[in-house]
Length: 365
Ligand SMILES: *Cc1c(COP(=O)(O)O)cnc(C)c1O
Image 1 (cartoon, rainbow, N blue to C red):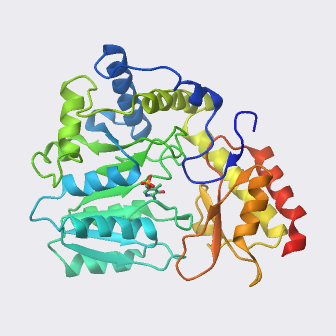
Image 2 (cartoon, rainbow, N blue to C red):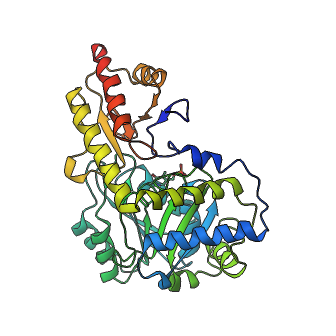
C-alpha cells in the first residue's frame, strides 16, 4: 500500500504499480516519431500476447473505456445485411446486445442464468434455427459474477456453422492464457485498465487480419470506426485518427514491460489463481459463500452472497475503506451480492490483510 491511499480490489480501474503511475509524469506529442513508435510497439506486444502465429493477426487501439471498443467492434465488423447472436449470462453480455439493438443490428440471444455458463447445446440449437446469423459474440470472464464461459466450445460451435467470432475478453486478457488461433477467435476485445494493469483511457482489439480487412465502410459511427482507426495506425506508423490518451499509452507500455518481467501471462494467471483461492478460502472461514460454483470460477473477481438479512453492505464497505481496502458492489440481478477483485498489483499479503480485517468485523454479522 506504499503507493496509494487504498488498495483497489475492483475489476478495473485497479491497483497499479508506482512505476506505471510515474510513467504518466511526462507530456508526449501525438505526431512525434517517439510516441508513434511506442504505439507500434504496444500493438506488436499485444499481438504477441494473443497468439503464436502473429502474422495472421493485428491490433488496433481505440480511445475511451472498454465499452467504447465493444461498441466500435460491434458497429464496424457486422455488415448491413448481418445478424448477431449474443451469448449472455450477465450484464456485459447483455450490454453487447443493447449496443447491437441501438445500432439497429438484428440480434438473437443465447442466454443462461447468471450462475451458469453458456450451454453449448442451446447455442447449437439457436444457430440451427437462425441460419442467417453472421456473427457470434460472447464474454469470456463475465465480470458481473466472475464466471468463466466456455469460449473454446462456443467458438468451435460457431465455426462449425461458419460464423465470425467476437469475444469480450475485457477482464481476462493478460490474466488468462489465450491463443486466438487455437481458440478460433476473430476479434478479441480488452482494455488498458484490466489484467495488463494499466490505467483507464483506451481499449483495444486484436483481430484476424483477413477479417478486419473486410470491414471497410461498414461502421455505423465516425469516431468509433474500428477499420478506419486500424487502417490509420497500420499505414501511418501508429498514428491515431483523433487525440490519443498519450499519458495512458505511456503507462500501458510500462505495464506491458512489467507483465513481461513478472514472467508473462501464465505467471500472472498463477498469481491471480492463488489470490482467488486464498480469498475464497478465507472468506468461507469468515462466513461468506461465493455466488458461483468453484468449477465455473475465474481467477479474476469473486461475488459473495450477503451472509444474512441484516448484512448492511454500505457500512461493510465504509469499514473496509477506512482500513485501506476498496471492494465492489454486486451486479447480480436476483441475489444480494458484493464483489472482491484480486487482479492488479495485489499479492498474497494483501489478501491476508483484507480477510483479517473482515474477520475482525464479524461481530457485525
Ligand atoms: C470492464 C468490462 C467491460 C468494459 O467496461 P467499461 O466500464 O466500459 O470499461 C466490458 N466487458 C467486461 C466483461 C468487463 O469486465
